[in-house]
Image (cartoon, rainbow, N blue to C red; front, side, top):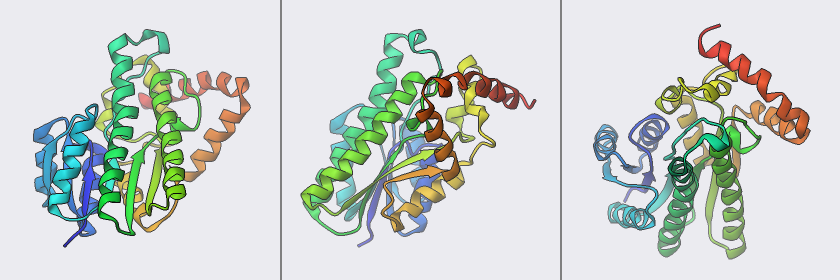
Length: 264
């Protein structure tokens, strides 16, 4: 019986490309998304199945785990669903802060817990939980303050979860993926926001295809934290260690992004 992989936020972008690559490796993919029609379109494209899933609901994750188990042994769970808003910390309204935290961080926690419970119950030796963090997990990014905080949380949770699993002798490998800016609808939808300019400061925008390829490649790895591209991780960590001078560098970086955003 083929292994089963669950992908959240599979209706577009990274999620859809990850689903395609998992299917190419022989997994039955359960594509989930808050948009049921988008999830169904992905499920059909990859020859898998689909269901609507609001990642803010812990019981919805458990239902997905049960549905996946009906198809075969659950071996891979990718917590990919996320939302992005780019404003200064005090400019978000309360509902927007709650949305970012519940989708980006709590959604990963609920999904990981459901995956671990289902995987522990069936047992096995080649099981993976992959959590989509961000380059902003590694460095303060003014303008993405609340979003970045959620991604810092994803990284910290993923690392500690793997430690819990190691201590308990549970053979599930956790991976946190930290991609740089990518050319996806998630980013393009924020192009009109002033504080999103810093996103375009990357030397180039990654493609969903190349990020998905690296995500699925982690199934052959024990790597806990994977930055795409790796060299950007060293730059980000260096700026984080610089403290106040690193924060002062954010404004010229934002201006550089502003020029690139509009092709300057």
